[in-house]
Image (cartoon, rainbow, N blue to C red; front, side, top):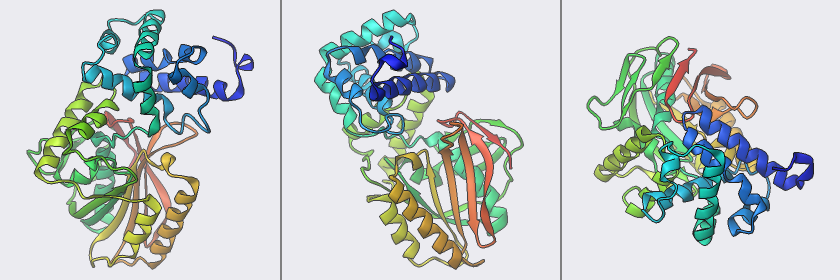
Length: 355
């Protein structure tokens, strides 16, 4: 590979993006996905439409999750049985970089147009494992604001985490949620357990600019394609979410996040219920103007909050300086300072609780 100073500026950014994403996947327990993404780099020097699309990617390819868009396309070819050449890479049977690169180049040569289509939109997973960090923060808030919550999620994707009122949780030995649920969230717990206490979710809904309908087999399959194939436990959670959605569809509307937040905050709020805005690994995908509107709307609603009608902002988001996934909470009235309550694995495998 050429050195950075021999690569056009945009292409150098793409190379760094691919390298970072490969390292990130490997550090997060998906070395097979890491090898796959790293093998995308030689495509930049080829003549495929996929390679050209990556070379000419506008803006910040990392924030756009460009490598994961293509990785989803590869997983689709595998899950549908369209092309099984990538299977030994997913199984960890082929690990030599040159051998992985040869497979990737061959697959792209045969499926160039089909893979190109996967660049059209960002990955959507809304991983159920991240709900562990949300529930832990609700337990923390319960002792401060009361046990009853109205939950509102932006970036809901398929609405998996808007069904967390039907999940069962084991958070460091602290139980919450619905016992016997097919969706058991039990991450490796580090640090002290969260405070035990009641949490009653009186309502839960969400929005997304392009929601996925879990009742549609094609859309459910697309959602699965964005799950890293060397993480079977995540695929099992997707199956559990599909089963829950078949019983009762999640309440998710197609709408811009800022528009929806402003509308939800303007709606009447029940007395004795904390209104919560929550989201996980979505903030980076919201345009700067939208983020500013949401912050302004929350600040204005916080100024109106009372002890009878509190407001909270609960997040599991990526710190763009450290690339750690942080559990942060802010609530009103009385708590204008954001509190860092812990950190978590990107897909919920573990939670480290600071409390």
